[in-house]
Structures are given as C-alpha cells and as structure tokens.
Image (tube, rainbow, N blue to C red; front, top):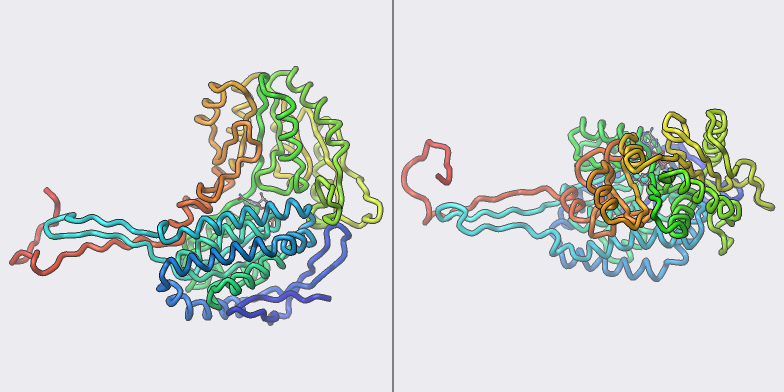
Length: 498
Ligand code: NAD
C-alpha cells in the first residue's frame, strides 16, 4: 500500500504521529493509499524550518521571486496530463474537469508573475516641510492554508502563489481525501527554483489544523471548506491574534426570467448543476424560473437531459460526471434526497440507486431533479454538494430576487435574461459576492478577487486579485526628514498640516 507523508524543508518525510487515514478511489471504493496525519510536533517542525529560511526569501528581489512562478507555470503545463489524472484518481471527477481545476490555479500563478509591480509601495514627496512619506508592503512572515477536497489544485494555488510571491513561507494543510496533487505541486515548486522550506505540505485532520491555529509563529491563516469549520477556524485564528480569511459553503441560485433564451439556460444548468457531480462551491443548486410557463418549459427541457447524463469513472473520457468523493458523501446526498421526498417536493428525476456495471462499490449518485421545492424544506436550506437540482417556482421577479437575498449563504448567483434593466437591477440589489449575468458559474479570473458574502465568507479580504496581495503583506509607512529640514527647539503640540 502506498504511504503518503508530508513535504517539509524541500523533502518528503514520513509521518511521526502514528495516526493515519485512508485515501480511496471513489469510482471503486477501494483504498489506494494511507495518509499520515500530523500532530503538533510535525507542524512545529515545519514552522521552525520555515522561520529559518523565510527572511532570506523575503529579501530576494521580487523579479527573482517572480521567475520561480514563470518556471512553475511552464512545469504545470508540461505535467498537465499526469497531474490531472492523479487528481481525478483521488477526487473522482473527470480528467478534463481536473484540468480546469489545475488551469484555474495556474492562472493565479500567472497573475503573481507580476509581483514586482503588484507589491510596489507608495511614495509622497513633500508630505510635510522637508518630509517624504512612503509605505512598503512587507510579507506577514509565515502563512498557513487549509483546503477542501473539491479543488485540490486550484485552491492550494489560490493560497500559496500570492503568499510565496509576496515573500512569505507557507504551510499547506490539504484535504485528507485527495492529498497527492498538493504534494506534487510542492515538488514542482522546488524544481522551479523555490528554496527548500518556503512551501511545506503537512497532511492531517483537526489536530493539525488546531496546531496551526495556535502556533505563535504563524501570522496569517487562509481557509476554504464548509461553513461550520470556516467559522471555527476564523474565530480561533482571530483569538490567537492571527490575520484570517475563511470561505465556507454555498447555495447558489439561478433565476430564469420569462424572456431568457431557454436553450442557453438549460445548458447552463446542466453544466453548473451536474458538472463535477455538483461538488463545487459555485455549483448551481437552485433554479428559480419566473412564472408558471417558464417553470414548465424549464422542467420539461431539463428532465430528458438529466436522465441521459453519462456517469462514469475518471477513466471514461466521455463521462459528463463521476462519483461523489466518499461513502459518507454518498450516504448524505441520498439521505437528503429521501428528506426532500418526505417533505413533499416532487422528485422528477431520481438518482438514488444508480449503479454502474463493474463499479458497484463506487460512490455514484445519478443526476436528480426536484420540482415544487419551497424555502422551508431541508433540501433548500442545506448545501447538498451533490448532483441534485431544486426548482423553486417564483410568481414574479421580486419574489425570485428575495429567495437568494434571504438565504443564509451568499457565494454566487446568476440571472438569465435578455432584459438589461432587469440584469442591472439584479446586480445592484443582490446581497451576494459573485454575480453572473447569463453566466452560470461566475468565478472571477485571477486578477479579480474571489469571495462570497454572508455565511459563505468570514474576514474582509478575498482570494487572489489585489486582495490577496493585501492579505499576504503588512503595510509599513515611513515618515522621513533629514537633519537639514529640522527646525531648532522642541515641539510640544501635535504636528498637523494646518
Ligand atoms: P471541510 O470543511 O470538511 O474540510 C475543509 C478542511 O477543513 C479540510 O482540510 C479538513 O481537514 C479540515 N477540517 C475538517 N474538519 C475539521 C475540524 N473539525 N476542525 C478543523 N479542521 C477541520 O470541507 P470539504 O468537505 O473538504 O469541502 C467542501 C466544502 O467546502 C463545501 O461546503 C464547499 O461549499 C466548500 N467550498 C467553499 C469554497 C469557497 O470558496 N467558498 C470553495 C470550495 C469549497
């Protein structure tokens, strides 16, 4: 059995805590590796090592730091097929979808190739009598990132690329479900020229996370995962004096106005609802058609498409979607479908009991569709994180708008319409962080920032874009006057520019 350990100080190291968990192949249910789970000692060792090497990295000219990322991007492209296949083998999503996961991370690495410009400070000549003032963006020191299973390449790169480009050292604690790609990324960063100890991957569970949150030498923590853990990590990190940004779960709605192009809306819902088996924080899980006629047309058009989804293991190149990530996820999603039926929603397409010949022990759930869902039902309130779409019928635009507005989560939302007035009003009034107008998954590109509102995000700076440069640096402002500009005598009054 393959044993997966950690990557500390530029080397693979075996676990020392004696604790481990299993890494499964979600298509077959087989255990394919065991994963070492770090304890406090291993986190402390990684941090101690990072502390030694970080000052030299921070003092490295920003062009030289950027060049590591130029080379890393080349290596990612060169190893794309190998990385995508490895990712799919642990996550279960299709290989093409894994390439999307990698490329979205790669784009953040491309963005930070501009670090000499992005990290530049500000300067004011003559801010006072013979006084110049300048501010610098200095690295926080040591940062840590805790990532979810669903994007094991993109989300680690969202985090470590800006952190490292800004001159920090980084401790990455990936998901226990699919740890192999994060370890490969760390190896490739060394091959790209990153000094050993600047990027460390320490595998583990709550014990490792708690060691990170209480470590006195870690200055900033970034987290992506479910809302209860995001809330916990944010509170604990803040209580321990750390800067934190924590991103949580979602329930993304798509509003379909009566004037929308129905073919476009249906295709968008298929990709955004069922791609990656619905295991995306930006997946659309609620469709809100406006008016009975729109709703009937939508459900009639979706039904045959959902019934004919091609579901398969990652080795099936033609598959639209793969299995769920774990047995627990499989049981949870099936349980929520049962609950939707019990609470009176109409199950139009039932994905329970889906079995794939030769893969009977895989965690496959068929595409499912509920109609006549109401806001009081558990399937509406809960993030299902599976291939289940709920249709909530709205009588008019205001009622449709009020649904995502009142929902606990505020990650993404979309509207399909040809009416510019409706689209503009929607974008202005909605209380959600990422909005799509005829775009179902409005994930911002690397040079804009990614983040939700409400229970989808804790903290005030987003992932990537300029927010990430702010998160990974501290501003220091210097006020300078040379002796020739200093007047004689002591000044006791608060200096002003009066
Ligand atoms: P998760 O919350 O179970 O795990 C995320 C990380 O937290 C993992 O590294 C895990 O080891 C750690 N963790 C788990 N339990 C912990 C505990 N009790 N204490 C401390 N750490 C703990 O999430 P997941 O199932 O891996 O990922 C799916 C979730 O992530 C979904 O809710 C999804 O919406 C969310 N997500 C959000 C975004 C976003 O940007 N908002 C992006 C991707 C995924």
